[in-house]
Length: 409
Ligand code: CTP
Image 1 (tube, helix red, strand yellow):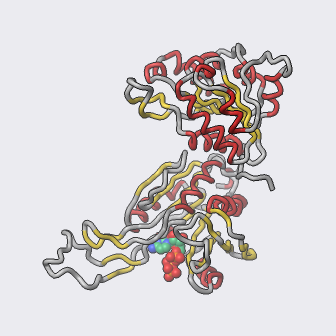
Image 2: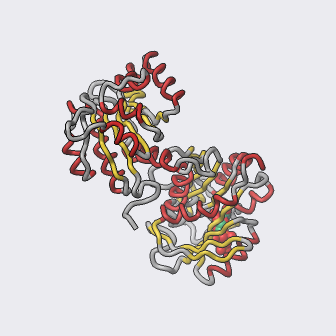
Image 3: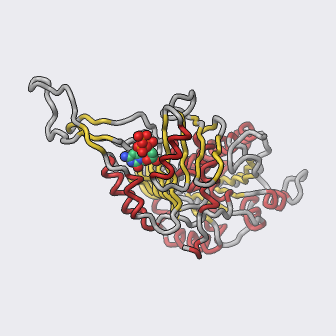
């Protein structure tokens, strides 16, 4: 198989770069897309050439970067680039570029290519905050949305030197790549569906500074949220404390305890088409957390009395909307499939993803996982050792046929 990952492997991305200082980020976008397996054709506007040279892109993509519609050896280059593209991404899209695109101009290779393509188009604006706020720019963005172009960003944050902070900052390279991925997925059954994902550990307080936690990194749940958003879903990610960057596009709800996770899930569940409980929720919590820090000098403590924490997944049984697909996880240290089958029935699940905590490369704090997917009335699906991102896609492949058509809801 070709190197790379879904949905970039072997796909053609046309990366347009217009002339703003944020153009430096386009180099990283080209690199990330190439590493993800895409064939990246870069087009630089005359303005972009004031900041960057084609050579930088060519060294990273292994492909010719284009600057003019009038190369003698490349007649009709705009038509060939437009027809070949699976997605067009313009990053940065300056105020001038947006104005020209909104007016339907074809006065350079990039705007000409845009007019000639049927591929989805993602425009990533970047400019000074006042230029962004100007009614002309806002009207241009409205027009471009009407045409069907996707507008990704801008972010709010530090602008060019001396310009302070504001809306107008180009998205980060990873976010731009995520938007390109969502556009490349095209129509999937996840489009417009609401997917609720839980991730990470919970923390159960012993006193105001100490807690009982676990080794969950949140990686599996974050990968699921990212993959569901990429496939077009509206994603809510309810997460315990994790050090991972929030996945692009997901609405993030941060919680600490099992009880807070139960409340957040109960709030979001009524409109969910799928619930994926990847969080490692505490099974036990201190019965009476101390109101003040427990001091050694005052005798300290030698034991903690525990009581059962709420079983979030079980509490959702009465709240699940009709047709909601429910996915649970189980981490076992012995007889994983047999124990998993019991959980599948006991928690009323459509799918249960089981991993064996004793296997190398599986479970907590690893980038990989080896799981078996159980489902009522279907044979067990034992997957090989895969990255957590790949596991996420295999799980969503099993969720997809279970999602009811919107008309049936
Ligand atoms: N889970 C939950 N609330 C809890 C504990 C677990 O919602 N307090 C969910 C997890 O998110 C996971 C599933 O239940 O999707 C299975 O968790 P696991 O801890 O493996 O199962 P338990 O039912 O807690 O059984 P045990 O720990 O005894 O194996």
